[in-house]
Structure formats: C-alpha cells, structure tokens
Length: 639
Image (cartoon, rainbow, N blue to C red; front, side, top):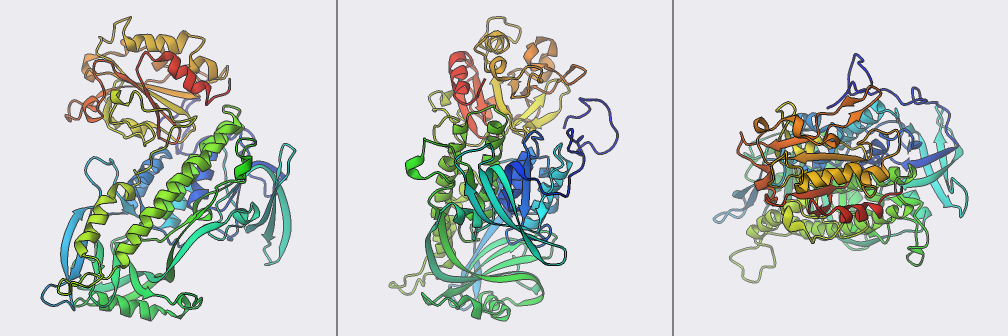
C-alpha cells in the first residue's frame, strides 16, 4: 500500500483525501449524473466501488431499501472474488472473518443399511495451484459492507441514496444526459413522491424483478425445474461428525442436503431437498413450513440427530435457470450503429440455483467488468465502442454459469442409485463426487476465458508465457520487490484503479545490456512517438496514470541494483516528483518458487504480458513486438 505521495498526513491511510468538491455529500438529489447505479446488491456494490475511484465521474447510487442490507442470502465467495477484493484492499479483512472451505465431504446411503448415511468420499475443495486465496463463506451483507466502506473512504466519498425505487427508465435519442430515470422516493413519514434524474448511463443491478430490465424490453428466458429446496441458517446441536465441513449428503429416502458451515464457528447453512413440485401449482412453495424443512433435514441425516436451537433465516425456493437475451438496451438490429446507454447486471440478467455458489460471484464480476469501461469512456480515454464488450463478454459467462448450474443442481437433487436394483434411475454417489471435482475450476471462479475482441488479443504468442493464457485472469505468483526485498504476489500489487498493467519479463541478456530486447522495449516506451505510454498519458499526469508498467528480472534481488533499472520503472510522481520504487521485481528464489518456471515464461526471449484493469490477460507479446503493442492500444485508447 502506497500513501504520502502528496504529503504526510496523520490518521488512517485507507481514508484517502477527498477530491475537490467531494468533501461532503449534499442531501439534495442531483438532477443530472454521469452514471446512475440502481441497487446495492453484489453487482451494484462492486460497480459503485470501482466508479468511486474516479471523482471526475459523477456517480449516483440508489437503493429501494431504507438502509444497507443486514442479512444477505448469498454466502459463497469464490477464490477469484477474493482476488478481486484484494484489488480493493479488502481481501485480508474478508479472509480473516470468513469460514474457509478447505475440504468437501460426500455422504451416501450405507451399503448394509440404506436407511442411514455413511461418509463415502473427501476431496480438497480447491486444487493446488489455482489461487493463493481460499474459497470462503461470509454473509453477503458483510461483503457489501466492505464495499460501502471502501466507497465512503474513496476520493469520491460516494454513498448510496436509500429509499429510492426506480420504476421506469427511458432513453431519449439526443442530449448530453439522454437517459431519464423515474423513481419513487420514500419520505421519513412513509409517504412517497416521484422524482426524476437524468444520466449519461444507467446500470440496473436491481435484482430478478428488475424494473430497469423491464423498461428496456429485456426478458429473462429459461425454465423452472419444478423442484423445491429449503434453505436455512441455523444454530444447532448435532452429532453429525462433519458439521464443520462442506458436505454433499444423499439419503435413500429422505432427499438430499448440501451443508455449508458459516463464518463464526457455530452457524451452519442447510440446503434441504424438498422434492418435486406439481407443474402449474403456483402456491406449492408457500405450503412448506420451517418445521417441515427441519423435519426433512433430520430424516436425511439419520442416524445422526439434529436439534435446531435458533434460526437466523430460512426460505424455500424453486430451482430454475434464466438468462436475459441481452444485457443492454441495444437491439440486435441496432448493434454497431449506436452504443449502449442502459445496462443490466447480476440477478437482473441471470438467475440460477444457489447450490453452485456462483450467483453473487458472477454478479460481482459483472460489476467489475463494466465499471472500468464506463470510467474509461466517460473520462475520454476510450471510445464508446468499448461498452459493447460488456454484453459480449458477460452474456457468454452467464450462459456457462447456467449450464454448470443445471448440471450441479441436477446432481445435488438426484436420488442415489440403488446398487441392488439395476433398473433404478438414480445417480451413483461417485458420479456426484466426480461432477463436483471436475467443476472445481468453475466454482473457484477461473473458468472465464474472454474471446478475442478490441480488448483481448489473439493467442499467437502465448507460448512465451504459457501460464498466462490470453483471456483468462492474470494468475499471481511469488516475487521479491527489488527495492526493499519484500516478498509479494505479483498479481496482488494491482489495484482496482482502472489502469492497464504491462508486465515485462526480462530476456536472458544481462540487465545492463544496452541492446537487449528488454532495453529496447523500454526505450520504445519512453521515447517513441508510437509508444502508447507517450501517446495516451495526458500531459501533466503522473507517468503511470494510465499504464502501470512493471518488470520482473531473472536474477535474484541481491544480484541486481536499482541503478540498472530504466527510468520508466522509477517514475517521478506527485507534486514533489517522488520516485516510485515499487515497479521492479525478481524471482522468489529463497522459497524456490521461480515465477519464470511457475508461469512457463521463455527465459531466452522473455515476454510482455498486458493485463486489463479487471485483471484479465489481454495480450502476450514478444518484448520486441513494439508495433503490435502500439496497434493494440490504438484500438482501445483515444489520444
């Protein structure tokens, strides 16, 4: 964490100085804003937290509830989401509070006595090497609290306006603020009044019944599965031995349970299979009681006992998967003729069962994907066509989620196959474990692979850095910071600040060599008129305001000195022209984990890895591919 660039100040360094004019929010609603974020759920909270980093972008966040969420329904936090939270400076707080899902156990009917359950398998929840962060469990409300705190401490001092429900959104063809949002504002006395706000862009993060989605004529399409599950967070006394492990439990006659331990050491969540529903019976779910859910759970856990002492929350839901036919207001026949003005994210555009644990995670990635793009367009750094990539990228991810969720929810709801009955149509418990294991990369959040576009290149040179596949998230690895010998994760130094990352992995030449690929690259970046750094960094801005360039040498940190580092890697910043010494790294040879070996980087040629602001690899290039680098950014940036 870096601070004091603009001068020493006492107090909490996470509470950054407010931007000019942002010291105190006016209680009066604005008439015009750049971005109106509707909803403070997972997608809206991440989007707003990202936009709060840009005080020049006037953002308004509205929430129909009267205050922050107190009890959320989602709780599973994928490794990828923890990586994203690290970019906001929130990962340490999250993993300290959360329950860590280290292993998952599987239970099935006993071979001798099928009326009871026995443990049949145990697997490591996250495969080795996938991430430096664990899969964790923490209440959705706490996740949103972290993000709201980050917004409040940001230079924008961004805070939601509560008690405002968007009822309609209309896009007008002309004007600087072409989107009009109509809202009902709840007053202190319980009365309401209608207010309107005009915006350049509106993002509907307002849930499965999204008014924003309905306003732009988008429908959720899919099917209900006519199968009910009860879910409850309980404090219970039980002799079930795996109550503090994530457990997939199949019983012969009482249905199935997915058991998820919760944070705090005592609370546990039970997803309880309540069986098929009669198609067309709209009131079927309403007839289930809390007592019925508990009784069913007790039957599934036989011969073990379960005594529920307190219930924090419970509900019954019907399994179903639905996805919007588009994620913005541009009709298929209009695509390419105009840019989107209204977007939808999270449950507003994809809904699914809770058991795959991906709803909150994918929703947050929706917000992270869109936030930096809106900021880049509004600040004039990128063309409006950048916004077309949101639907392009996130709709494909949502479809993959729907397919996986259908497979996993079907497995979790399947009756275990009776080995003594060859005609039995149930699912072998070993098959359930196989589906879980093979889906591990997806549930960890690492199945996303963005296809080539204006912000994601081809994989022609991927062989130079095999561990950084183009289109996938940038996978961190241990390094040592040259200036102070601090061990770090290379990917963990990146912040959610909208900047592009350029990682230069040095070739085999000596660091002092004047004509190496590495040296020629930095002369090009610093001196050439074609350099994206020179071309797209605004005059008067810090040298790394747009591009955060970092280098990794092959030598150990004691074999190098900052005197061999190109000037571009010691940028002079802030009002005092202070040098930033945190741009250069070496392998962590002490731990034996050499990043060049871990990520398959060509030692002879080196590699250039370009990473998007949302932490996905945009390109892998040779160090001397100067024009390819320039051409790529010419399609992304505006000079």
